[in-house]
Length: 420
Image 1 (tube, rainbow, N blue to C red):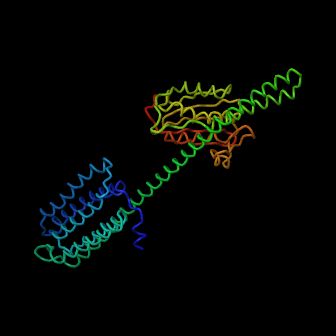
Image 2 (cartoon, one colour; image 1 turned 90 degrees about the horizontal axis):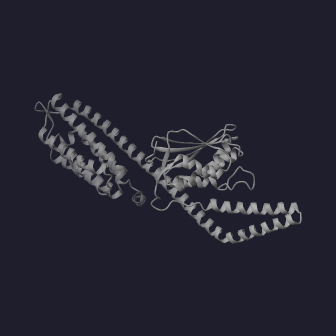
Image 3 (tube, rainbow, N blue to C red; image 1 turned 180 degrees about the vertical axis):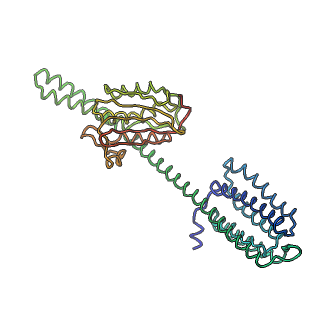
């Protein structure tokens, strides 16, 4: 059992320390209010100056922690060090205020619970031992609690104990809930990062494979195209229209093979990111218009005149979306293009007026080699590559569609210095 517990991953200080820092401020506030209540309402005789000095140590050390938390510094030994200090400070407070008869001695449980959630088994064991030792010392020496020169009565002790247990339960539930919630959030982020890295590896593998295929197939495809052209000319010379049509079909399929290889070998972002700059929306629309031919591309007002992004990667990510919109409109168009800034994101929308997609088709859209086009008309790679490129820009591609009302593809990525 101990071996299993020892092997469990522990929370990093970047997760645990901010919540520990917040709880220490809560502790300072609670301790101050408790002393005021004891002095003004209960008239308990205590060494208030010494108790205030202990609270001041917590304030000073937490101010120092503020610098660490704000700068996101990764000091692995800081969390156990702070917990050990807090156990000693709690012991000092209890020593000056009744020792084991102080109902707030239950607060030792809070520090042990924090250690159990935050630290490894050896550190947790140390916290348990330190808490037990400090609590045991309080039996040997402490300043008794007195009200008007008399010991605290049992009814008042019961009330204090009830409040202390309730406070301990609330603090433990709050801290463990918040920290484990932060851990789950971090795990989700790590899972997303791993998924993006895996997709980038797939894109790199696809690019390498396509580059090799393009290199190997370039010469035979070129030879087939030349022979097909000669065959077409010869067929026209001997008035064989069917043979000439077959030759043109061969050439068209060669061009299609080259197009597929070009799509598969779409370039990826270089490590560290390519140079970015403002890309005028009108210039982007012009390049996309050339790629989709006669189908009209309409730029709709969205508030952005230019987009700060790597131009080549932005164009490569948008090109499959525009081509899909053109095909969905069966070439009649129009295809609508809009760019706007929304809550720190750049959103470039491509909308068509085609037949739209059902929920079943929409759920599979973007899967590699999945296409709804006729055989020989689509590769099923366009949207998949667009999403991979969008993820390298730090964003994604979202689809919204309804049967009979067209489809909207939205390329989203973090906003730079967008030009409005």
